[in-house]
Structures are given as structure tokens and as C-alpha cells.
Image 1 (cartoon, helix red, strand yellow):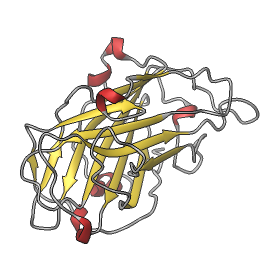
Image 2 (cartoon, helix red, strand yellow; image 1 turned 180 degrees about the vertical axis):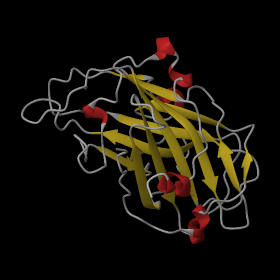
Image 3 (cartoon, one colour; image 1 turned 90 degrees about the vertical axis):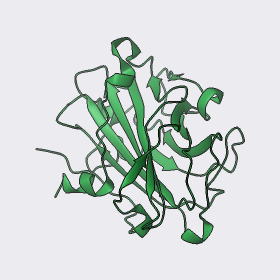
Length: 248
């Protein structure tokens, strides 16, 4: 039976409606542990001997295309590929019955980060998340979709050539050891930032950013780079509405 995903903080925002989008050829994505782009690391290792996990924060960033005028949000697609035949229980979050239901959190708060541009300035609202596993009928895959929004009154353009913070994904260490521990913490995993859709008000036009600046993936416990981490999770353009429709 297909698992139902969890939808957190439901919201309706006209700026995040499904609109025709331009493909941003000159733009690009970065994905790192700890900070944006080259200021972060590609791999995170953890001994998995404690329920305390420090510094496990993935940071997505991007260089925007030309032509933005009033950016009101972003839709982010991150795909997970496990080296094991199925996504380990340690990497199952959000939905009811997941082994570590509350151990993944997302944010667009970069008020304490300085290495890339913080467009959000602590004003991002309405963060929503889905986490789907197995994804695309593949037991070793999962898909994380994040939406961040900004009030239209706070919206503005992005500067081409600048790298902007997009989102954070934080992992906690609960249920790594002890009673009720979730298996699979030591299993190598790769996570690929496949796209960021930059959204603007209805009628203005949106942009997909799918190219790579330095690196669009991070690894856990060494990941699965040897087997083609960045290509192990092919992009399928997915809107928020399309993901919900899979589970109706």
C-alpha cells in the first residue's frame, strides 16, 4: 500500500500557483552541509552512537536568473537515494508511523548566516513540507518538497551573479540508539537538490533553476557517489498540486 505523506502548515498562496515557468539557463544551484556552496561540506559522517547529532544542517542556495521583479516564494525538490535496497527507517520522517517522524525540520531563517545573500531577512512564512517514500515506485528513494513564501509587500527582485540562501534542512539524532532505535543511521545516503522554482505573483511569471553552480548534492556517511549520486535521482518536474494528487 502506498504511504500517505504528511502536509505540514497547510496554506494557500496565489504566488505559489502552478504557472508557466521560464527555464533559467544562466542560473544554478548549490547544496552543502553547514553553509552555502563552497563555504559548506559535501559529506556528513556520524558515529551513530548517540541520540545527539550536532551540525547536521543541509543548506540549499542558488544563483538566480535575470528578470525577477517580485519574488514571493520558492518550491524546492530534494531527492534522496539510499545505498541500501530500501530507504532505512532512520531516514523516514513526517508521515504517521515513520520511525523518526519529527527528526527532520526545514527553515528559511538565515539571519545568523553571512556567506551568501539572505533574501528572506527572517520574513519567510508558511513553510510547508512533504516527504514521500518510496518515491516513483522505487524503494530506495524518497522525495522532499519544501515551499517557502514571502508576503507580497516584502517581495522584490534578485540580483544576477549573487548567490542566495534558499533553505535549510536539519536532522536531529532522536532514536539513533537505545529503546525504539531506528535502523540505518550508518547506511550511506545521497541527497540531490534537483530544482528550485522561484515564484512571483500571478501573471508575473516564475523561473525554474535546475543547473548546477558547484555541486547540487550532499552525502551522508560517504553517500553513493561511486554509483553516480547526482544521476541516481533523476529530476521529474513536480508541482505541489501534482504531489498532492498522487495521494488522493
